[in-house]
Length: 306
Ligand code: GLN
Image 1 (cartoon, rainbow, N blue to C red):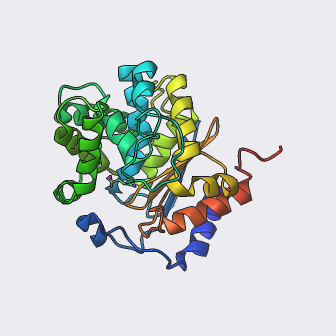
Image 2 (image 1 turned 135 degrees about the vertical axis):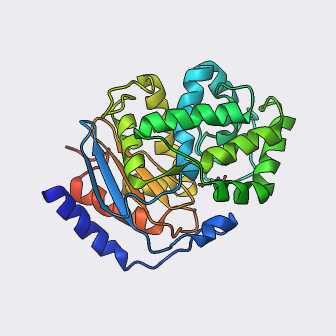
Image 3 (image 1 turned 30 degrees about the horizontal axis):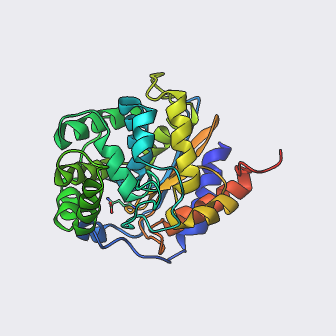
């Protein structure tokens, strides 16, 4: 079939790219095999195509952020979420210790400050309850039971000084309720959920499909939450490379420091790539390259004149 052949050719063209480095600020991530490369694509009709390392587990990391944001919107409601988390691109790194000057809110839910806040707005009395709700929801999105990478989870929590600093900052200004350490613990655990490129492509296809999981037909997000999540992915999903990404690739996307990268073409497909070596923004080098080619070859850019 032409799609896998095309995807294979695409992968082969990127395999030689040795740029970037695996994340090492989370010690356990430094042990990842840097040569992994996989791609998966799922249509809104539920057809999945995969090539390469598409069934290898890795931690979801920041790709959890738009999905947890969607869950917070449905659990806490738009007003509560928007009163605590902005929707402005920050132009800063993902782990910037920052708040909007005028409103005192985290800039957006894709940087850690906003994502930690979004985690706190998911239903559940403590981090354990919130994390289980998130795990169940993500499992429904992926269409299989997901579990945690315990080594990544404890490795990240043991070295989480910066995210703890962000948590205390959010507590000080009244954005976080409850124990900030417990909230950061839950956020880090959410980031340690294991997924494959295949899983992520189905999760992305659920967003492309307006919140209905293409294989099970289950409604997992309301269209309004999907629209909101895709909007912040489009403007903030690639952090301080968001403008570059928008002009070259032109679809909503989200990256994670374990090397995952998803893109969503509303009404059509979800795409996921896995390759652990990252650029200076924390985005997968070969992932970005693959998306650039895909977008050009398949005319995915949302601003393309039909
Ligand atoms: N858990 C990671 C962190 O908070 C997620 C970062 C990312 O994937 N960009 O540092």
